[in-house]
Image (spheres, one colour):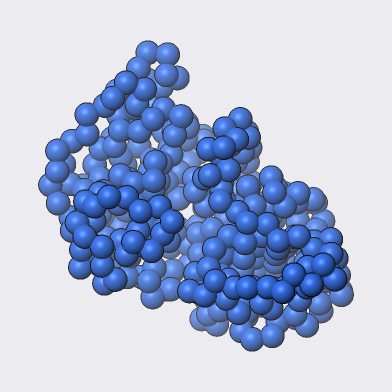
Amino acid sequence: MRALRVERLSDDLSGVVLADIAEPVRAPGEVLVRIRAASLNFPDMLMTRGAYQLKPDVPFTSGLELAGEVLEADPGSGFSPGDRVMGGNKTGAFAERGSLPADKLSPIPRGLDFPAAAAMGAAYSTAYTGLVELGGLQEGQWVLVHGASGGVGLAACDLARALGAKVIASTGSPDKIDRIAALAQPDAILLADGRFREQVAEITGGALADIVFDPVGGDVFDESTRCVAFSGKLVVVGFTSGRIAEIATNIPLIKGFSIIGLRAGEYARRFPERGQKIQQAISALAEQERISPAIDRVLPLSRWREGFTAMARRELVGKIVFQPG
């Protein structure tokens, strides 16, 4: 079968190749899936460089999340051949077949096609865990979402709006503002360039943000500490800016806000019952058509380099989805 392989770590994708490899053999407890779509996530790119906290031994098949059809499953697993499923298992999604533990898969919500299902999983579980599970999101609160052109940022905007929050979407790219406004439909949008605290204050009538959702880090994090309301929450999702920010502890002390680190996948692994309830809540919202993932483009897996390059150049508004074959 064809699969996207990381043969060696490299900063320029030179160690990544589309190769023919043996099809996976299903082990007991696993589900064999014909992969119909797989979405590109920022950690996928980082893992080609060895720059992510998870460092698989090379060579490995890239790809965190997928959607497809069950080919084989154990009796009693909850899955049968032909079932439409979505999920992921750290690596292996950018291929024609995958064999995953049954607990890493869930049924595709009614109404979602394979590309949408592949684009929903990691982004929406991250958004839900950060905003609702850890952030305690309440209807009517102000949520400031940074990196709103990315899959996770757009998911956070979509989810917060669906749950009745008031959303400020931010981006570092002026040319993306119109597309973000059309896709995310936030209450306001701002350019996170330099000082933006006064913009947040003006938008919120001086209340500032009850929750700041930050996948960007660096200078954006620094300024965000000035944007959090008293007793608010600053959710640290990542540092796509490339700089890991630091903070003097007197700032959250004086302002009375909390800084929360978010690792949605690890949260679900440590608290599997909570992870299952999060997935059920997301699926219910999708079936009610209250949320829908934003997809920038769908590409055949043979054009994988185009997708990775677009992500590296920060050209995307929404998710890249690859289709094998």
